[in-house]
Structures are given as C-alpha cells and as structure tokens.
Image 1 (cartoon, rainbow, N blue to C red):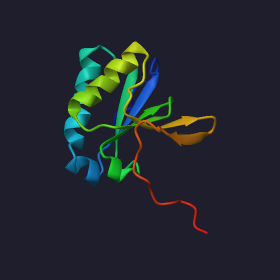
Image 2: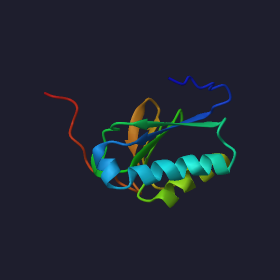
Image 3: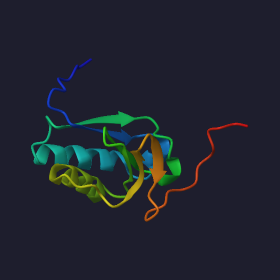
Image 4: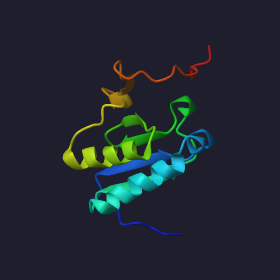
Length: 122
C-alpha cells in the first residue's frame, strides 16, 4: 500500500464512487478531476480519494472539498475540472449543494439538494 507525503496539501477532494454515482458518470468525473489536477501542476496541493458512498445518492455525483467543507453535485466531467480550476483560483463553484460553516451543514438555497432521510430517530 502506498503512503503519500501530504506535506503542502491544502485541499482533499473526496470523490464518490458508490453505485449511484458510478451510474451517473463517477468514473469519468474522477478521471477528469485527477487529469485537471495533473494538468495544472497541483498534485502537491490537492489530494483525491475515491469513496464508496458520500450519503447523497440522489445528488450524484457528489464531491466533497475539505477542509473547506463544501459539497458539490458534479453532473459532468467538465464540471469536475471546473472545481479544480476554481480551487486553484481561490474561488468556490456555484453548484455547491451544502457547506459546513459555524459548526453545521447548511444547504445552498440557490442550488437546493434533494431532501434526505433524517438521521435522528425519535
């Protein structure tokens, strides 16, 4: 197993490769993001990890940007490339579905995500 030296890394992209995301182009999105990182020479700044499920299957494909705490619905490989370009420019991408701020997740009212199942069982 490889152990990466993450010194200098400032962003970690968690790219969902669960079954729902894979049916909606998850492999192509993953490759586009990784290709754009390499093309822009950002391999030492942006690390990627394929995940099995990010828990937002109806919003597939889902990419999470950490430590920024931004969750994106990535519908095309080109949109995945745009996320990388915007990270490089210090901007966020408007197709944000959730963000983590002030200690909690808040939905983007301009780009609503699907309502999920409550994790709290009364």
